[in-house]
Length: 133
Ligand SMILES: [Ca+2]
Image (cartoon, rainbow, N blue to C red; front, side):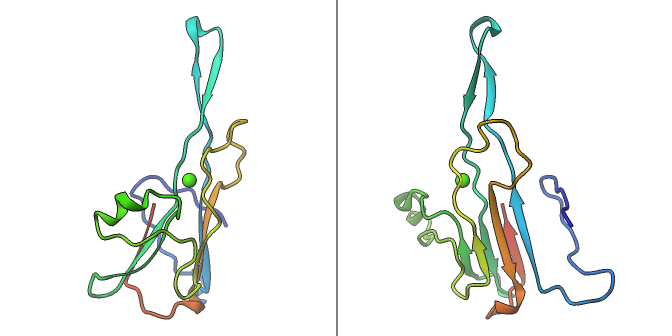
């Protein structure tokens, strides 16, 4: 079941049947930006690089794990004490499909460009919060 979220929107992942949720995925889909050229006589497409990332916070608000693109500028991130990017969490419970650097060049195709899957059975720690962007 797909749910379309807007910025800042939260959802309850509890199942209506009371069954325990075992996993979920979050995906983002986007296209290149199309702009008009001189006098509107032509169109130009500009690639867009959105990044789907996630950090995991425990009950003490300590950053326990993360996934974000390893292609990020490492030197820039280390200024803020952030570790090197990776696509799989330490316990393998979270996986990111890969870093799409351009978006859909032929128009938005309805397929997610980047996806994070979460296998709740593989989580080795109890996380209080997941933040994804
Ligand atoms: Ca990206």
